[in-house]
Image (cartoon, rainbow, N blue to C red; front, top):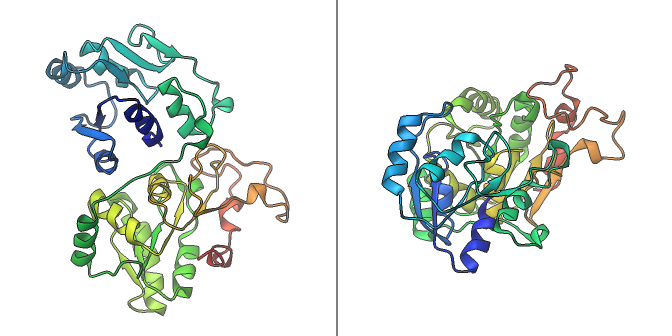
Length: 317
């Protein structure tokens, strides 16, 4: 969702280095406008003062401008310690001193879609038309497919996970029922944390239709996952990071939304179909509780996901 910002900056002549955690760095390597990707040696959580200061010393004097995309305090520390003259970001989390070009941070309920939110850091207007784009080397795609013995356009990708919580996950039984109805095999992608979920789906599919499902959860690098998504016939996912990857590759996709809102983080692609019962006028009783943005359904029914049937997804594949 930061790619349109980077494309804008590159178009006006800025040479871009992106600092990213290792688990997301391959996504930035798939952006042609990015010259260099620096993998940040930080663990998830905590300020890690010593590590940030050490890296800041290495980077001192190398950059003219820093665009700080996350809203956290710790993300603004590195460019400040590195002495970057112009440091652009949103106000918040006591970052007044750390940033010297501050944009007002919209209230949570009034924040624009995230692509426009990030693109505004460029200082330009006309953000509503921004759509992310990724580009992979075709040799790398072919190599990944050969390793996994898959053919381009010869499989579907399912990404059934959503790290945020179960209120963003379409039920495993629905994924399995959908996979059994498809004519091409299904590849399951996810992290090691989602291995149990993917195993549940694969087991249910294989019992009825052997050879129909390949479970690669926790067994691919992000580079391989990107290649598989780029080469898939179509993808089905929840509101997740891999959903945005499929949109950026222009892969046909169905994105299932539950507790979150496609008004805030939609898959920005003409080939994306969003299913969200909140906006379905034929669905009763209406989902007055959505979007709740909760990790788990406080009402205990998770109707927003349970009531989206496999047949509702199948019509778009």
